[in-house]
Length: 108
Image (tube, rainbow, N blue to C red):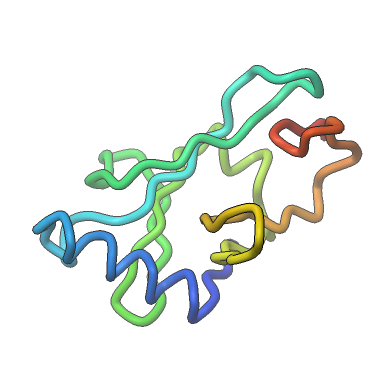
């Protein structure tokens, strides 16, 4: 199960509308890829769902996760963070056992 915060849902909708994308077909795709100094990293894109994706819906915003990536991010919370160093979507992942110094990759 994946949880989407209200703020993340709002930002997904805002980005899709700004790009002229259909809210009923497009959403935020989260993929876990090998890479970074800790072994894995997140990739996030606005995209359509693939047939094999798990689809999570909150407040008319969709998040798509492929079955392999879901093994790494199950029970996570998708949020949107704003701060002095920038803004963007984040994944609070209870499965993470370590992160790299720069915070862009993780291990499980």
